[in-house]
Length: 130
Image (cartoon, rainbow, N blue to C red):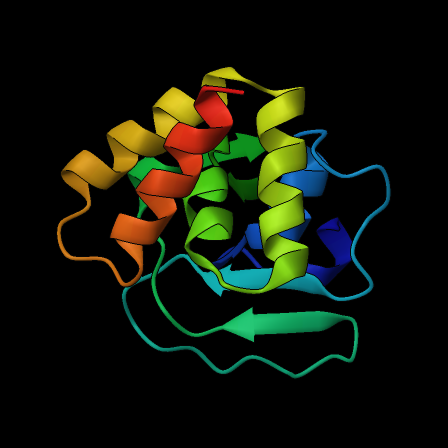
């Protein structure tokens, strides 16, 4: 991942799930998200899905020089999606790292208004009770 990353980008969503052991193989296109408040010029790469919304520093950790979304934030983002691939990745990450469920639920408590949070919390609670 390091060759795809600039210092102002972070690994998120399916790519972060892979980093945390929730997926056995890396996604075909890695998801990178802006980790600075200002908009940036990013050269588009076929191997990358770029998200131009800011992910805040408290939701990131530094692994081998790469910013990666925390397990809780990763699971929260995956659970918010209606895409079956993301839902399956959320279940897989929750199974691989069960503590991420509580971290994701706690993230929703402090995140403010977030799209699809009600559905995501219900899905995470369902995963927690399996």
